[in-house]
Image: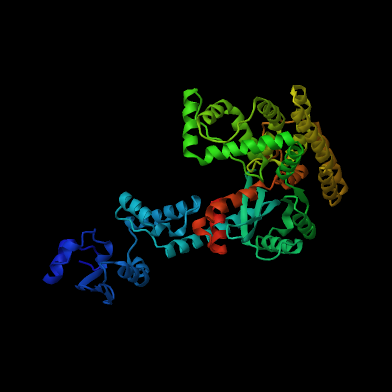
Length: 531
């Protein structure tokens, strides 16, 4: 029998002295697999079967034995063991564990947790989980492989646009993230996270520009970046100017400011929002209140829906909070009446104001969702969407009767009009075409003019059709315009993709893992978003 083959408990009992056997009734726990590699010499000493090292054995703990085996012999044994179906299965299971950690934002230490180890043991008693150190090594290897794959794909793109955003972790450490957007050979709009860099320095425009430039150079995309999308922070705008890259302000951020500033100008709406937040917070924090609301909803024959809390920096969440509260107003009224609370429910007049305010705000919510798309072309929708918002405001004004909602309508109308008039026109597209044509011969210029004329003579595609499919089918018919389409249609309307990166970062850097190494955080987010 090989020293690496399992030995039965009965064989162990035959090999140990009689006086030690008397210890066994005291040891009721299951025999650890580590005993496959050790012999019990005395009541407090064991001997390694592989290297003959003698170790202390105290308090019936196998920790020192397990540590010795993992440090000294685990890799050696794996290297000397021929690859079998069993080993192939272990490799597959190891990768499954790694993917679980990456995709579900689990800590690397989960492989050492008692509950997880118990679950794996119940599912497959023969499978031995990798150590935390091994998982970290596997993650580094996976990161290197994915980094090369994404680099190849990004560098094959004709042009790219990037989004940038800043984030501060629980332990007040700043990070800068970049996401890259491009159209691949299959005419699909792709998004890749380039990296999440620790940013301990001052958040000046020069520092931001330097780090962004370094990341673009690392990815060899500096000369193919067509646009940088950020929020309207002055340092972000100045940094983009330093980089001499075309800049686009995040439309979701603009809409957020438009709605927030408009609502803040109306005291009645501010009061309704505050009272609504208090009511929602009460139901979210009290188990009794939560259960009562669910009970009342069931009695009314309504679906059991929880109230939605707002995130102050995102007006969409405020809209969702007010909309859900309005939809569940009867259930909330009944629940509050039967609960011991000092909270004052919204009055009938306040609900009338809320109903009309939601009518006015609904198109802005829909526009924000539409323009925050990551897998569909969104940059070309900004100007049409702003015009549609103006149309929606004009249409909804006919249904407003409360002074507060009418005031909100007027505030929004003024700000939307100002924003639409300040949006960059499409002249840059024609300027780029002129430059492209200028580099060609006279015949090529004539061909380009004919190409544009033929394109303008075509009918418009429906709103539901994918513009990338359209251009993919016409790349030979309109070669110059096709090249421009690859450059401009990859630009997202918002920097929401970068915000989503940091939403995931918030899951990874939890209270239990607020000391996570910045390099490990970068690898985890890169793999989570790019796999």
